[in-house]
Image 1 (cartoon, each protein chain N blue to C red):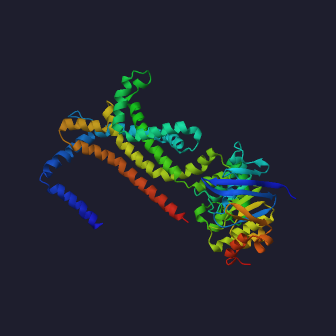
Image 2 (cartoon, one colour):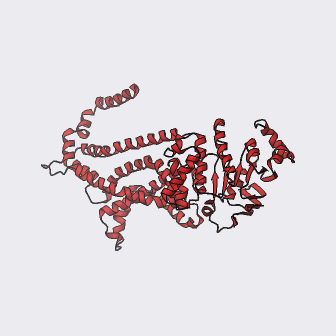
Length: 264
Length: 249
């Protein structure tokens, strides 16, 4: 504990004692600018940043349930041993590879600038919000489907045998035996992915012509010529992320204890 | 002779290129208690799992209650609704209470009403001296209690045949007795059972037919007093001599 304290104090000391500490403090940790950015400044015609952040929250709250739903069939398809589903399974695998391999920012470019230029009836005239949801669900659906898949695979085969032994159909086996046990295992990793998604809503702003938190920070930077506004944006994300991460840790610890208690 | 409910004819089962059962022929009649003995890897568990189509066979035929299990059109879950199986490692559902573990099969597979299923389950729990554990989760129970719950879970389906796969092998020695007593009661009640076991003394006590397997083949079978006391085959004698040191005579 003391060594950690020393390390932290040391890092702080390096900042404070550095030759440019004063300039750094002025441009990154300026309390007046922080307050003006955070709560807005009507004299400079600057809207409060927390209001722009609501857009990010709306986006992640709307995307997360869709991600959780969309990822389930992808995971079940990837896990299915049936030879009848070989074709769809290949498509699902290709999708997961693509969505996990391509950075979200590129997907955002492709969707916001590519889809409208196709001039298709339904696809090309969606709102920025719908395009944003699509990008997030596309990318995070792949991650979450892998979390589901790992969860289902971590339920021991003996449980499948036990379910089969009492005459359950394959569907009932999933519904009553495998999925309920997998869900317990995946709660914490799912929260971690949610934290990540929540942060990545900032990337949507790059494509969408709207003022979400990252745009708001850029505007504020243009007004004050000061980078404290980016720190303010970071603080907004931290306010959401830190409690969620703690929750994930707590759930993981609880799961660990439960498993130790049930160990034999 | 009573009616035959299980008939195995020249059954062959392979895992990859390893042949686990090499032509096993056996029939079991209603009310009979059959004990499979043999070293680990001799094919006992696989034989049991073929009887309720947890494993598909690669050759020969198995017919249970007149249904040929080797057909591709036979749905395993329908077969297994009449055949209970209990595993060495209990395999209770850890996310469900004891009562829910027992009622899941009757409620979901047999579509029994919740109240009926629970009443039956509580009757069985009382009969096995576990009534006060109904609301507990499996991890609160001892190994012996868990295994008795697993037996009840199989019995709740009202099976006509019960398969027991080395059900005492994962238990601490002092807990083996309570589980064997439960099986002995079942045998007395006339339940048809095939059990894989290492408990030679117990087999002698409950079995109507003892089958000694080695390398996926039946080496010797017959009434316990013959196979266990006066084995004809050298392989059976070798196997038994390794176990008799442990088993009371």
